[in-house]
Image (cartoon, rainbow, N blue to C red; front, side):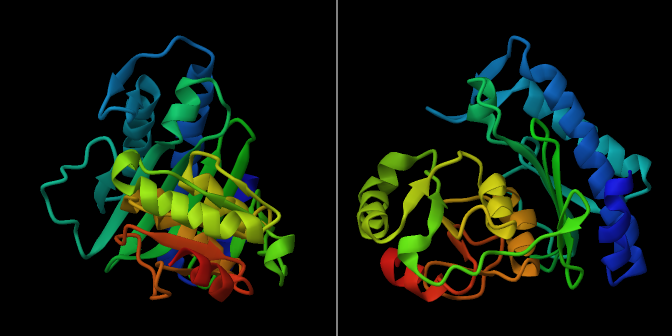
Length: 272
């Protein structure tokens, strides 16, 4: 657990230090399970026409919840595979969990996916953990405590010009409803930047903005568990996060723009 040492020390609250350690342990536990299942045949169920859930999603979610409870947590849980969409999310402290962000990648044997765990209070993240099991990269953050990758501090890029930037985007599962807007945004952004990437996992995209691999990322029609950990990670790494109009971001908003800060207004002008 030595990857927790510096990030836990940097956490500004003794209570949150305990929760951050528990979230990190839960993410590593789930990641080890996902890594073991990766090369095996998968059981796939369709949640929508292109929206998948596999045995790894279910197993990882159960492992995360069990791990958090083992560490004494009694905090409410909002997890992707067990969340009842008809209920109103708790406005107090809540664990917001995506056990496997990038399920389509996992199901197709593309090793780019992540476990995402955040502790949210009044709809704002207090801490976040993103673990990419195939790369063994553990991203951790707490409000006021900085952003970390494998216990080393990370920062966003200092890129000033769009033409020098590498940005990322994602596509919603109900893409037919948003196709015209997505194509419009892509036409606006692509000629202005160095290139665009599409990883297929918002948590990974946000982690990559935080550590300087991407200069920006935008996506629409998201769920809270897609961005709750990653948005705080970007902010604590010195970046900026907003909705498409430049308003302050919450994981309970459906659209996100994250950047190194320097490029934020330029990207906003292109996508809004």
